[in-house]
Amino acid sequence: MPSGNARVVIIGAGFGGLEAAKALRRAAVEVIVIDRQNHHCFQPLLYQVATAALSPAEIAWPIRHILRPQRNATVLMEEVHGIDVLKRCVHTQFGDVPYDYLIIATGAMHSYFGHDDWSDYAPGLKRIEDATRVRRSILIAFERAEVVHDQDEQRRLLTFVIVGGGATGVEMAGAIADVARQTLAADFRRIDPRSARIVLVEAGPRVLPTFPQNLSDYAREILTRGGVEIKTATLVTKCDARGVDLKDGRIDAGTIIWAAGVTASPAARWLNAEADAAGRIKVGPDLSVPGYPEIFVIGDTATLTDRKGHAIPGVAPAAKQMGKYVGKLISARIAGRERRKPFHYVHLGDLATIGRRAAVVKFGRLELKGFLGWVFWSVAHIYFLIGLRNRFVVAFNWFWDYVTFQRGARLITDVPRGEDSTRGA
Image (cartoon, rainbow, N blue to C red; front, side, top):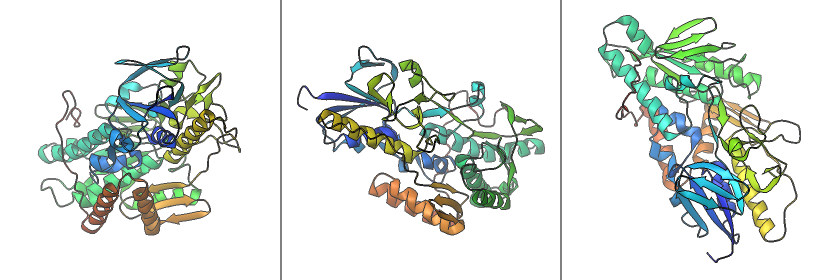
């Protein structure tokens, strides 16, 4: 790297951060990518890890390997603690990293709406660690139910509550139903896994609220047919070690999974920038922070409305489009031909799978459901996976699971000290 080149620091190696780094591969800049993890995770398939359909290695890849061909990129596995906008440096646990341009792509965390203590009992799905924790909780629930003698305790252990009826909640509910009704159906002797109770709780009037009404109704029908109990217009008022309190009663449960909301990373506090209620930084039309043209915020950390006044959704395609836009903007600015066209988001569609052979797809004017929707969903997700090997392995695993009703990643790893998915059993 020739000395004197501008330095672009990217915080976060998610979809947006990686896309920004790749967009800068031919620019005369030094790219520094900082992430507290050493891997990039394909978050849309985390629920498949959580339900033992895939292993973590099939949906995650080392960041260094991804950026290895890019000679102007350096990867630092560090934790960011703050940003000094006057000195233009990022504070990390191992020292300060100066920048000429800064791209913040730190994503989002689970939001418990002011009840952060619920996270001890209701993990969400944002990281590989979350998915393996949920997988462990689900599988141990069946194992514990096999050995306890009290029938009430068995029923509690075999009750699974998913909070949030968006795509993640619907996909988790359908997958857990498949695990109970098909994968584990013949594996136990003292319990019948098919008797498991799966409850999907949604505060709004319907599941999949971002989808058209007809696709939402179809998803509800398929879930109900698969044995999932759906409670809409229902608020969770408390989560504890043995279940959830709802506005209209209580459900004792062995496993609670949170899919109800997210909040942005602490980036707004780092910059002392204006943010919305979810902590997302309000950015300008070019995704820069007002008053700081050298700082850009993308993905779930940013909030911006499109030409129709609709908020840009916190989904992977939006983050990738933002990352590509900012990378090209910085490249053009350094080359003396700055782009002035504001960011324009192109919505590619919405997809959600419902169990092992049904999905709903809204792709422009195209609407698909059922098996054809599932095929479209599968092809789309395989296409966006990184690496030929991962695409092949995931495609084979899905085909094998479909034919045999089996899931090959049903390993229970060590339970961390202080954590027991039976929660009081």
